Length: 63
Image (cartoon, rainbow, N blue to C red; front, side):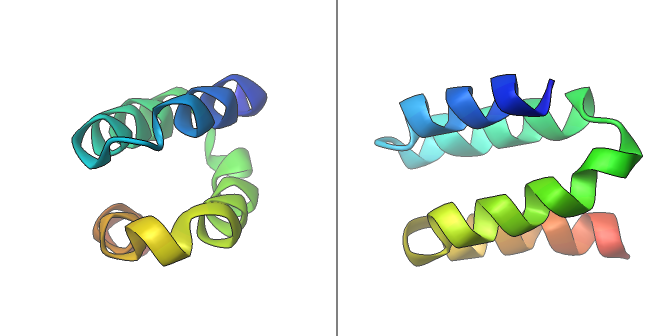
């Protein structure tokens, strides 16, 4: 499932609102064991463009 979510995020990364919507949906699809690996990938891939959006969702998960 993680590969599917990654593919979707790459395809919608041109639009911040769509990216945020798909990130939120993707986080609900993943199992807890996948979340840390997914978080690392997201920051590696999108932190320059969407750092604040990533922080918004991954800080919620950590807290």
